[in-house]
Amino acid sequence: MIIAAAFFCQSFALQTHEVTVINKTNPVADSINTLTVIIGDDIFRLDGNDSLMIIRVGDRGLNIRDSEDGKKVNVERYDELGELESAAAEKESGRNRLRKTERAEERHYEFSDWQDYDSPERYRGGRHFRGHWSGIEAGFNNWLFAESMMLPEEIDYMTLQTGNSNCFNLNFSQVNIGFSRHVGLVTGLGLNWNIYRFVGQNTIAVGPGGYITEAIPDNSGNVKKSKFNTLYMNAPLMLEFQIPAGYNRLNIAAGVIGGVKLNAWTKLVFNDDEKVRTGGEYNLNIIRGGLTARIGYENFMIYGTYYCTPWFHDRSGPERFNLEPFEVGVAFTFNN
Image (cartoon, rainbow, N blue to C red; front, side, top):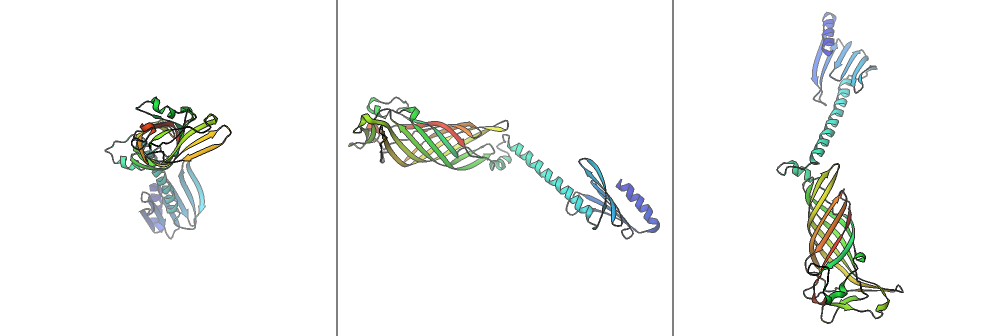
């Protein structure tokens, strides 16, 4: 249509007027080729490309645009000669934004799948890796002796009420080291509060021999609760795999965890609601370490931690035995 109009205008102009034909590329959107035909001193002007054509006589013209609903024809008044370039550039700019969005969505979709570890996409996707550590955790804890929850008769007083021995964790800091979008290392910091509730009405203390031993309160028959509490600062290092499952992910992580002791104390609660709290070191090593693992769907996780390093100073545990604490619980993470 443009070529035919140009040919007609050129034939008409040869008889009485000078004709100027310009074929140029828009400097803003370099992919738009614009054809301009001018007859005389702007007596007649035609501007056109693949999305817009303006046929102008004087300061009025016929504007024909391509749109999603088809062609639109308007009669407009033009005060500036740059209407075609501005309109075409604006349309192409919109197309470029759409192409960039589509390319970004395609890249996001590609990164949502497992990547070949030899591919450069692996490293670009690693920036988007988000592990599952920061959040809150709650569960139950107990301890083992020789890999069993059955304690020797000598330390029977250390037997716990598992259902009432709880742990609460606040993991407030997280660092992600991604190998790909769905594989990486996770570390961070968290507070770990353990409550060990004894079955009996006894408590514990450091005896004359320098090791942990049973302590019987003066009015032991009036004891309602007896607890041993610890507070640690924990830091894990876990390798996490995230398996796409539809629009969500199944997360599996395992690794090591270390803790620094911040505090330890015993607490007695009597039937008349009197409370006695006693702080101390309780022969605990300042640092402990263990193994941890977790599995979950999106931000809901089930986790378990087992501390296998010596918990007490050498031969300073209950009756010189050593115990190995563990905990199992659920976690709600804030990784996203």
